[in-house]
Image 1 (tube, rainbow, N blue to C red):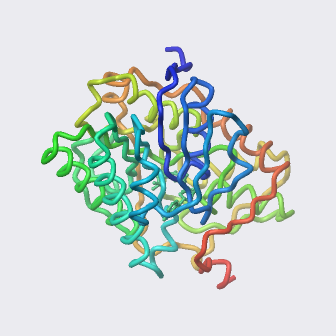
Image 2: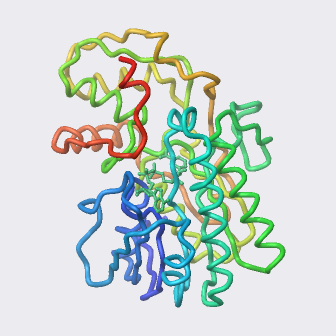
Length: 332
Ligand SMILES: NC(=O)c1ccc[n+]([C@@H]2O[C@H](COP(=O)([O-])OP(=O)(O)OC[C@H]3O[C@@H](n4cnc5c(N)ncnc54)[C@H](O)[C@@H]3O)[C@@H](O)[C@H]2O)c1
C-alpha cells in the first residue's frame, strides 16, 4: 500500500481543520495537490497547526452558522466534516452544547452541502464511542450501538442524520468511525497527552483512573490516510467504515510504554477520583472493511507513534483552550 494520495487540485472543505486530526487531514490534502478551505472556530484548534500554503484558505467560523456555511460550501467538490466538541468529560457538564455542535452543526453542514449542488462527497467523521463498550471483539460496523456518553449520543445522532439525508436526497455520504487516534499536534487532554504531560511536568508518580480499560490506538497519520482514501474509493459511498489498528492495549500498559520512552523511573498510581463515570471498558476495531473498501491498513505501530508523539510533546507546550472549564483540573 502506498500512503501517498493524489487529489489533483480537488476543492475540499475541511471543518475542524485546525484541530488534532483535522490538521493532519489538511496536511495530507495539501501534499496531495488539493485546494483546501478550512472552516474552524478555533475553540480548540490552533492556527500554527496549519501549513502555510497558497492552496489553503482559512475561514474562521462556526459550523452552526447558516450564512457562513452556505458561503464556504459553495463550489466545494468534497466536504470532510471533522469539527466537533470531542472531549467526553466536558459532555458531562455541557450536554446541550454537544448536541448543538456535534448534531445540529453537522446537520447544517450536510444540508448546506446538499443545497450547494457541487459536493460530490461528504465524509462525516463519527467515533468508535458510538458502539459503547465491546460486546464482542473485534468490533465491526454491525456491532450494536450503545453509547455511554452524551458526546457519543450526539455523534451517533449526526451519523443517523447523515444516513437519512444520504437516502432521502441521493447525497453521497461516507461515515468514518475512527477508534482512538494519537500523535503530535494534540489539542485535548486525551489519555496519551495526559500521561505525557504528567511525566513532562516532572512527576515520578502517574495518577490515573480507569487503568484497566483498554483501547485501540491508531497513529493520526494512519487515521487521516483512512479518511482521505474515501476521496478515491467510490465504493465507500453509503458505507460506515471503522478506522482502527485492530490491536488493543490497556491504559496501564500504555502508561508503562510511555514511561519507558521517557527513560524516567515512573510509578503508576491508581486514583479513584480520576475514574470517569460510566466509561467504556473496551474498544477493539475490526478493520477488515477499511482494508477491503479503502485498501487501507495501519502502518505505524503504537511504540513508534508514542515515541514520535513524546518527542513532539517535549518541544511543544500545548495550552488546552477549549471553551469549557476542565472539571478534573478544577477538582485536583
Ligand atoms: N481524537 C480521537 O481519538 C477521535 C476518535 C474518534 C473520533 N474523533 C472525532 O474526530 C474529530 C476531531 O477530533 P480531534 O481529536 O481532532 O479534536 P479537536 O478538538 O482537535 O478538533 C476539533 C476541531 O473542531 C473545531 N471546532 C469545534 N467546534 C466547532 C464549531 N462549532 N465550528 C467550527 N469548528 C469547531 C475546533 O476548534 C477544532 O479545531 C471529532 O469529530 C471527533 O469526534 C476523534
